Length: 616
Image (cartoon, rainbow, N blue to C red; front, side):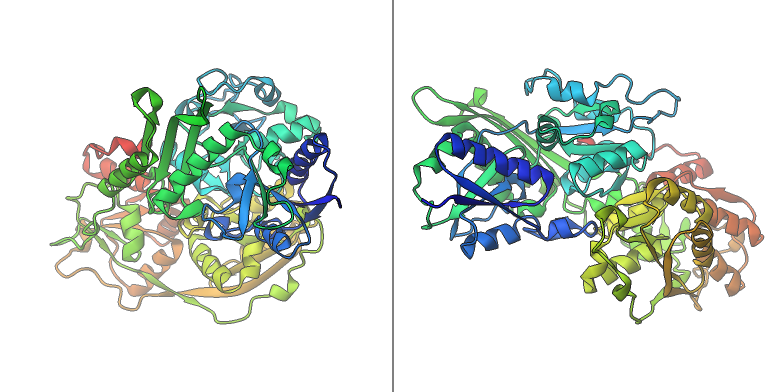
């Protein structure tokens, strides 16, 4: 019999996983050959993988269908939950540890100037420790995230992990770091990110194969408890997939590869997700424990699930905790019923769904005017008491230029660490870039770096969190950041406003960076800018959301309001430079920052009676 050809992705981890299956087949007397191939996901470092299905598996299943391979080895969590009639998952080998690891940068320090990770075990210790899901060597998620300093950069491209982390710590800035596990650990060691969420199974398999570099020993972190932090459905499990009715259908070696408890647990998690709809695109985690029953097949011992509301990016974009819903079941209370668990999740999600009437225009003169459109106003003022009357006063309008972007200058033939980076310099640029990437996917393949927290949150709201978020407020600071974090040979692409951006480009060029810059949009003052009828400027409170809003206000000739609020330091500086008085600046560009400004102004108490499920 000709050797069985095993198809796999070409990444180091995927090759290790395929080797595990090949080795087991060899023990069964079956000869194999491995064919590695690149996937769509492997040919991209940017964009949102959460908006596409099968980016890591499409090429493998195509090879299976055309007969160029006999079986393929997937990470089960990468496979869509929907069945494909011509394909069958013939085996799920014994599952590796399904936990997530929260890992800290070696030099990370808390605001109290203590080592954030000094109490956490070293990575090597975590990997050597046992995997008792009942409690040993694990940390509750809330405790694990507690050492991170305010505004810490958290590396993860998973919507499940992003939504879950922000539900616990809404101040965190999510960075969709991608690439191999080793490359993501390099980002962590460089200080480009402060913490990293990663599947323990992948890290463990690489460590056992001596594929992790020695500096990894300096990394500390926690293994997250599966009850407070359920894994991705099928995480840690491999899927051996074949063509239904093909050469290997019914082959005895396929059945020998299967581990019944692993299959039962992983398929229960996937089945629960399937019951909720949305498939692998939802921010959903589930962990099931299946155990062999006496004289029968494995039975579910317990199940834990956690899902974020569909609108989770809206609150997260302004520093609010997304709403999450939990459900669990245990065999101690009777047979585990997945339909009942899914029903409880759907019921609770319905109870916390956004009120369609929320954000409706208030009656009477507003207590606060915000120089943005209604959607931005709703996001920034969502923490204020509903009795506070808020009105939008859009000070500017964005005009996106209908001109070609220099896609012909994108060269992705070199090493991935030297691929061009797209620098997103403002929240407005974030919206422009995200919309362009939908029309021209080539831009979505590039890694993106956000200039500042506000820009990073704007990208998250748009559904495409940046790969990195620089702590920088201008060109010189970003040039220093780039010199420390980005390969000096990687070009920088900078789409910017016709009214700004040149100082950033000049600073980067002065630092010796290769920059391609172009005017992508402009911001026009609103010619109809005017106070609501009946208002007096002396008694007005106005929140300015950008320096361009300040310029538009000055051009309008209106009198300065009695109280000028700024969303950030650059806007506050623009207000003072323009001659505004009584300028107050939010400590952070979030709904919580605006709430604190309001409380400082009127002396009220913080909003109470929030749904406890918002914090998991």
